[in-house]
Length: 328
Ligand code: ADP
Ligand code: MG
Image (cartoon, rainbow, N blue to C red; front, side):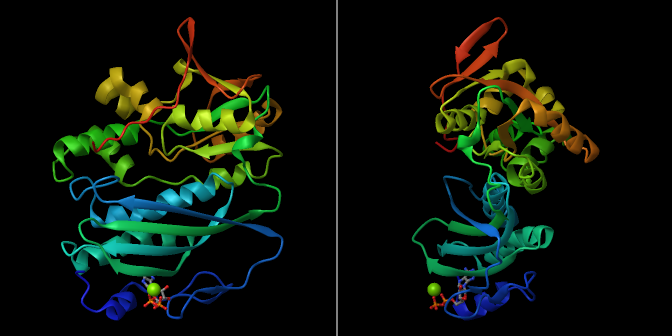
């Protein structure tokens, strides 16, 4: 491992102060110690990023790798309607990664600690033969009985999606083709940044938790995959109108003919997709308009056995789960 002194390294990445008053002990003892808050349900999730599978040195800077490893987990907390509070990091380090690069990874994580006031409370450091692996666990909380489960969709609901989708997959293609050291044009740079530096939708997730019943998923694997997960869990069918899928101006300008393919199958946009009762839509829409957030109705829920259909011009075609591995 490139880390000569593990204790010195941990000292360097240890936060100087904590945000939460409920944290009794973070880094420095055998385990973190937290005094739970009453009346809230706890949320815990974990995601791993592996060099060569989820990123390479050519697609992501160390700072962005750290940022994204935490951001994708925060996105899962957002998709449950929760607020993130704490995180832990396990890092497996091969020799070829320098200590400075590892510190930069933690700097990227710290950007999210500062934005969301969440605390790094522990982790583990081990060596790895060839590739860098980072596993992040995030803990959060949501008000009791306000969780936004995938199984919450009901017949008659509207299907909505936040922001625009497809940019991240297009950005990744650019990065694989030209590497992050290329000087991209402004429009390409926008797509690349959405791949490297996604924004988890914590505020929208939280505002959705105030409604009675919402189903929700974050878009890690593309619209086709995420809509199928909601349809399967809720045992209903989703109908998506292709013409309503929100695509960014940058994406349409970059490659209009492939934009939909990226939106449906690309993934890693970390926007939110969900369903809610039509009676709640107007209020939700108004909240978003006031805060300047784009949320679009792209379809509806009907009776069925857990399938998704795409309205394409006059046709209606099955929309199957399909992702592709960009690195292979
Ligand atoms: P132990 O031998 O008790 O597991 P470690 O030496 O592994 O202790 O860890 C010491 C402290 O540093 C613990 O609080 C642990 O959670 C924290 N820690 C270790 N590695 C990391 C890391 N990569 N990121 C964040 N915290 C870490
Ligand atoms: Mg340990």
